[in-house]
Image 1 (cartoon, rainbow, N blue to C red):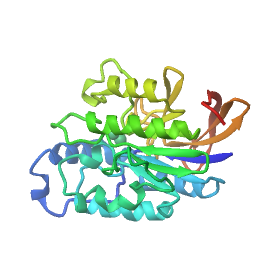
Image 2: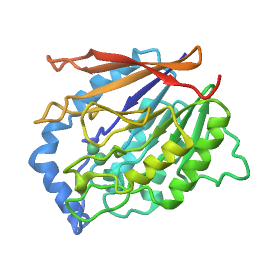
Image 3: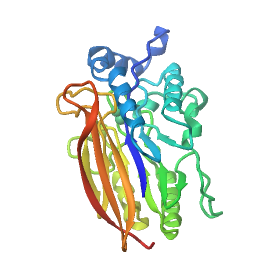
Length: 304
Ligand SMILES: [Fe+2]
Ligand SMILES: [Fe+2]
């Protein structure tokens, strides 16, 4: 049995603009959107409650599926690095970037490079035929389970929040999944954007969702986890469950869910895997997190 907590889109609120010149590009639209309403939705108080609840849960590892920051200011990345350390050490926490973590082009050492320790291979010897992570896709192998971290975070024009994996990453992903599949492990793919076709969401969508689906169907995976929509969702690519969580810091807002996170408990069962999903969300009193649902899935195994 392995227990993985999955949270996403904290959009850390502890930031301010110290140099107006920093807004002289796409960042201005993000700053306006933050000033108009987002600062009232993503609250440090809610995130603290989530972390307090998380600290009480018996879990083995935490996965964070992107959008830690808002407009990719260097000081936001520093704050996010501190926040990651408050979640746990790099061998207990895995992170991938979201579109807000690549809001504009930022030098790696001032941007997501600050989170590098949380985005590296761990416990897995790459076969010579598998290209080195650059840094995506990286692989974190933990017993009978592996996390595969992707980046769909690319700078986009103003008002766009789309994502792209690109051919090189998809090709490497296919190799990685095939190797891990041969080892018989439970493969969990982490990606910020939901990799499913969504009508009317072109400006927010993964541009190469179809190619990603082809790789999944060809190489296989047991579970795909994402964020980005700020909603609890369950979809499928063939038989592979695709699960999205709400923002970890948000109050309910229009059709967006209030803050919640998931705990996945994975165990082998006969010739399959049992996946129990526990959902823990912000209570209606908004002063603590509590169980707010769950479900169980049986996932075919290649072999045990
Ligand atoms: Fe987000
Ligand atoms: Fe996003």
